[in-house]
Amino acid sequence: MTRGLFITGTDTGVGKTVLAAAVMQRYRSQLPLCYWKPIQTGSEQEDDTAVVRSLGECNEQEILDEGVRLKRPLSPHLAAKLSDRRITIAETQQILTSHDRRQVSWIIEGAGGVLVPINESEQIIDLTQALNLPVLIAARTSLGTINHTLLTIEALRRRALVIAGVVLVGDRNSDNRAAIESHGAVTVLGEMPLFPEMNAQTVRDWALAELDTGRVLADHLRLAHRAREASKL
Image (cartoon, rainbow, N blue to C red; front, side, top):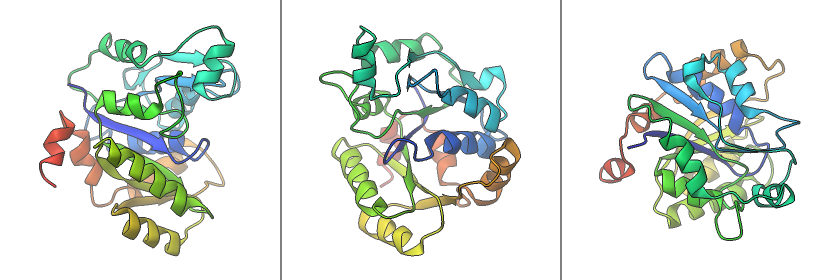
């Protein structure tokens, strides 16, 4: 069974990729990890896998660089349509199945938010559910984040998905943090700044000092199945 974390965001460009690199930096000394981006759009302008490889200081065994790669920086369903193809969850799952690494905990990054369409009937949240992993949410600290984050939490819980926690990205905002924790019944596991110098050292230093100081993610990363964690609630 697949184990690890699925990293999603409340929006596109919210910080999922840097957070994935930070998780790699935080827990690689304790667990064998492998990062995977199943669906990447705008691949000619951005390469999230390359970013995680660099910021996370990943070796080749810690990266799975295969998946759906689409040139246009659009929603997956539209980028695929304009490329005369159709993405399916089954297609992405087959890639993971063909790279079975039983001792590895996967750090899997979604595309955009949870309700982003993959095709005419499937969304990123369907992929999340199919992978059956606890979800780590990246959310902005700025105005509007309470609504976006609570909507993301509600969508995930409607699918009975376990929420590992939330990481806020941007300038610290204690009021927004408190509202998200209270109204969302979740734990904020860190507040990641907009690094003035984005490099592996700044990401590593922040991750080791401030990400998940209570080690909540460590237990999730070891889970073989989501139901095991749900039974503790």
